[in-house]
Length: 324
Image 1: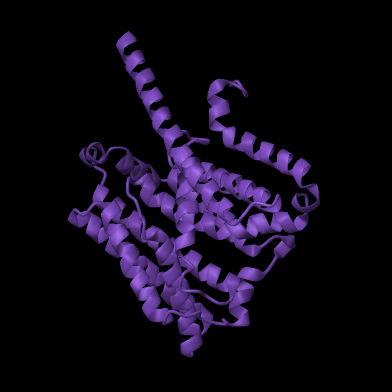
Image 2: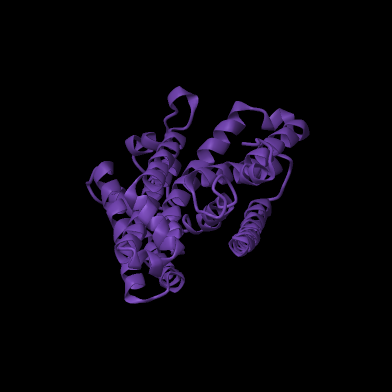
């Protein structure tokens, strides 16, 4: 294998760009960028986004969108916080109820898709419904402060690193194994690649689509519970800002490692590539709009690269078929 061949340069370009970003900002703002505080900030701040992106990755692999995923996160955080502050339940029970609510939202999305509603429309509408419930439950005000024991579940730093980062990387390892090395993962990818062909081959595509949406809903809710524990006081507007970074990471991830395919390793690379770029620009004096601009450009660029990459591969396969 040629380490620096054209194919490998494309597959691992994100890692090279990440290294370039680190070098640039190390020279540009060494006093603030090359610190343990910045490292912990990048790892800890992106853990929730990574968990949300991992959940989103499952329906995307199955060929579906979930535009309600960020608002599902926000609702779960509000539900978990409201149960803690307004009832006598302990935080583990509150967290379990919030995650169950997220799974139910995923099941509702899956049911609408199986009924024939396009996933884009179904989850866009669900996002608006969840926003209404979030406002209702929160009474349009901050919920908290939450219990110290609950906050410790997300604020601990074993070995000096944020524990939420360890949660995220463990989740990434589990999802990577499920998607890449189990029958359910292969069937999920087959469903997303060509639903009709997969169904004719015996794959229960409806079941895998429904399950993908449920998993996404549950993981989004888990991310909401963790972010509630992390911040200690939940705002009703918490969820929406996570939507664009999660989608940007998933689509940028399709240009890495396994090009043209939603994959866990590519998504992890994309998350930290975006995080380092944004953090470096912020430390260099960038305004608040830098984050949204950077993520938006990354998303558009990733989708553009993916489209051109697919066209190139299709032309190459067509040429090889004609030569044969």
